[in-house]
Image (tube, rainbow, N blue to C red):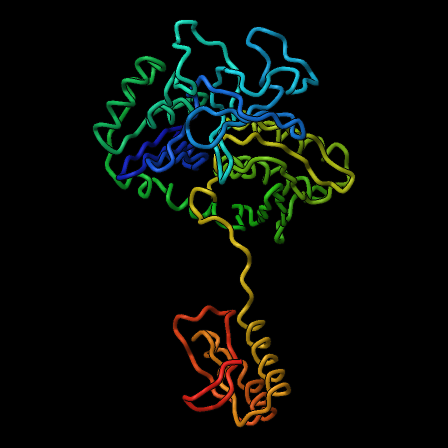
Length: 409
């Protein structure tokens, strides 16, 4: 697909949009019935709590989770924003204010809002109340991608096509006659499904052979550039590799919807001119990103610092279950279980012992850990493994006795 295109695919429970540039997927938007976007909606809300520590306020807008209002966004409409405004000087708890949602909530956090001025005819009660409802998914997708030079909009069905045509006639007339209809499966056919899968991976291989490695923590994303043997022009390999990586980094940031603090560990460049060229390349490729990006500079260690404004959940948050605490390895649990057997035998001598374990742990003990299991048996006399299908990996149990009649320890 040449040029830039918008794909919109509707399926039960979800409407998705994708931005395609010269055959590459640059952005994907998910609108799910279970978690609809509030972007662009405005509300008459009430300030529920002031938090001076983070210089912001929490506003009840009637959508469940309180919205967050930063001090810099709390100035009265029409007034100049104070550079170092304190939230308590601008609003107070219980105040009634009109706000617009500029970023959807994520994880356990509510949406982010800015203070706005609305028509006086809007009813003053009840509060909270909706002033302007959220846009429908198709309109939201088209609005998000409207800054790109789009040559065609392709929709998966007639209803979506009609919604897209209605929005374009009102907001983007030149695109009104370039709306096509395809079928469900559009994302798979155009490679969007593959792009989503690749964007959920830790490593990205560039056509040149170099590699990007993404490590995402709660408050920071680190991107490591590996040359992987790629060779540039004499004396310019670091600059060439870094320059080629910048467009893909810009695409991945947008596609993955990574936000907050971002650090790029680029290949070390000795020349100041090389560093400047790479920084210019990065700034160019980040233009047009709906998540406002700021390239802060390069540290003495050669780390490039960026910030990107969050505009909703990341792709990983959309596609993966919430992060849980890491589970212990099978090997670690196996050795701990054998230590528990030895301690029990020393404290409570018996004719034999039974070790109740999860099936996977039993397989490991009798496989890779067979020698260690035999060693433990020689220490305690007789040791019988009991596999229990419903038992969790780390919840092993040592019992006295090697027969069916046992005593738990």
